[in-house]
Length: 170
Image (spheres, rainbow, N blue to C red):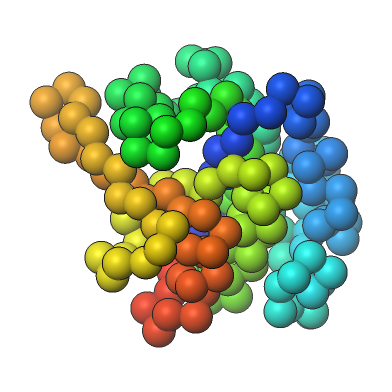
């Protein structure tokens, strides 16, 4: 059963050359396949988990690559206007299981990558209505329909992790 997803948006031409294995090299504890890694110890990057290996998939792509990017041009424009930054790349992350632990690990990984890449975590949906510093709700209209997502700084991720209603979007 597939679990929750998140993305980390960033802008850096040097980092953009990194692949999924490059980005995850100091996070992953094993690589059963090139696009699948296991995480068994998040303490090494600031998390709280040590235990059985948990599977994650991902990829890195240019945001302007219409084939690779799932976000519409309207969403990309709305995010740019909300943050004031033109993001050029995205690390897409997905937990392959759906327990509360997998939600937590996904957020810890996304938060760590956002810190390292000087980026924002796109929760791929709205996770909370509670105001939080560094958490922005981005809204846009596409094909006559209203859409929204939330993006957050690592500080917002850290705050979200300790909330009673914590979850990532599935």
